[in-house]
Amino acid sequence: MTDLAPIAQTDLLCSNCAGQCFFAPATGALTCASCATEHEIVIDPNADPSIEHHYHPDLPHTEQPKVETDRQFQCETCGGGVVFHGHSISEHCPYCDGALVAQTHDESYAILGMIPFSLGASEAQENALSWAKRRWAAPDDLSSVVEQSRVAGLYVPFWTFDSHEAVAYTVRYRVKSGKRTVARIKRGSMNTTFDDLLVPASPHVTPLIRDGILHDFDPQKLRPFTAQYLAGFAAERHHQTVSTGLTLKASDKALLLRNRIKTHSGKKRIFDVSYKTDTTGIKYRRILLPVWILHYEHGGAKLKIATCGLHGRTFGERPFSTSKLRGFAAIVASAAAAFGFAWGASGIY
Image (tube, rainbow, N blue to C red):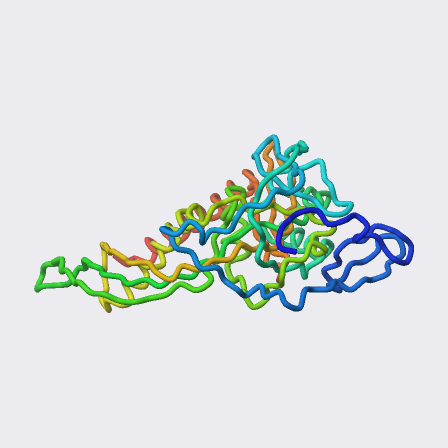
């Protein structure tokens, strides 16, 4: 199964008591919510999630076809669309906590691979609370507010891209010439590759999610897409074309190329980099990665804490205590004044 079409509800029922099953990250199995019986998830032995699809911008047939799927739920606040499998249908958006409204049907692209949750809800909750407790200059009630909130599990859509780059570049750098600083130019060329460059496939995947907790994604952990892994969780489908994904990764690719060019040039004090690159060998995957998101409100502001569903890395948004910031500023000012007084009293000029 390679898309987010609904699996039969009977596939999520316990064969022992007919109770509803959910995916348990701790065991990697479907677990009955009623009698706790575990059911092994059978993966297609012929499916290979490591396979990457070739893409050429001048050959439209290298894009996957869209598949029509069942209804999704649309957020009235941020516009995010998610689907649910099993009994986990929420009234709130996992991305922004806004209200969800059922839509009739949807078209999306097939999922090529995914990494199931390995971190459970209780661990994610503990990580979020621990992160909140470690915040410097936080309001005194921040921990209690976070503790009263609950995490929501979500599979978020990403791309992985491979490519070969033949780069011709020019760097401008500064050197000392006597008492003057002068600019010099160096031109060069290099070949470099990108392997499994991770790019969000949704405008709702913020830097908080990708750069904060998923930046060390390991493609070796990919598994064939299996709908039972979604039981009890929400998931967002893939709606972007490959060309859109390539456009979105352009800024990341440009930053990485600039850094590689600086290293390749062997020059220091570089202040300008320009280049042209011939991109070939583009390959891609559409995948899902697991994230826990905790929404909370403090002082009228809606904030969130995200925890990686793979290894538990946690990062979030937080408020500051104005009184604590003022107190810290007063301490710093007092310390600076005391140092100045001691310096002056020492008679050192």
